[in-house]
Figure 1 (cartoon, rainbow, N blue to C red):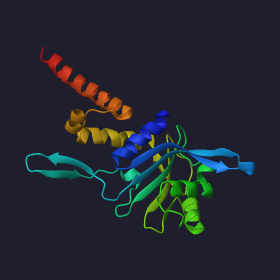
Figure 2 (cartoon, helix red, strand yellow; figure 1 turned 90 degrees about the horizontal axis):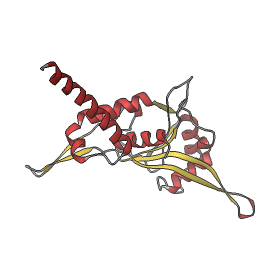
Figure 3 (cartoon, helix red, strand yellow; figure 1 turned 60 degrees about the vertical axis):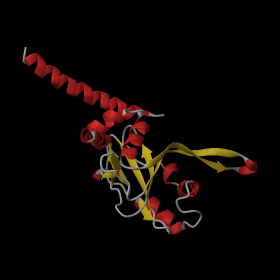
Figure 4 (cartoon, rainbow, N blue to C red; figure 1 turned 180 degrees about the horizontal axis):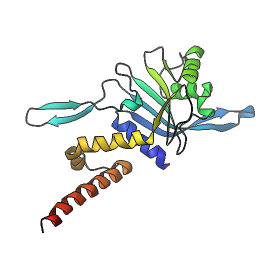
Length: 210
């Protein structure tokens, strides 16, 4: 998996999204031939009440902690489906990813709206970056990257925001993430970095006391 895609996947999962990465959209051609029209970097879906949940074993209840990043603009009251383009440089949407046929195929494939989506909803999503589908779900196009240039009709998220959010998440849930460990490579690497910084501060205090 591409490093940038892996980073965005981790970020979205921490924000409560289920994710699918590098999903190919297949088009049918003449005489029964097929071709890959594009790979969608990340498709993600989030229910509106998603939150971290830590079980309180003493009182047999669950402690809920919601934490979403303002940079992502997560809807508070509707399910949210993201079609995300991930770039190492400028955050932008490829022409193929803005193709209404590609967007329709992705929405239908993941059951977000069945076959009831209209051309007007598709146009709104492609031209404005978001729409509310007939079933009440929000669908959005989002671009991730290192820089932004000019104006865009879709939401753009910088990697600086992504990394800041993940670091804040690790700091806020330090005991829990250390207990659980991190099978996710991105989260594991950033946790190791955090441990190194904490260890450095502890070592400096110890050396100062010698």
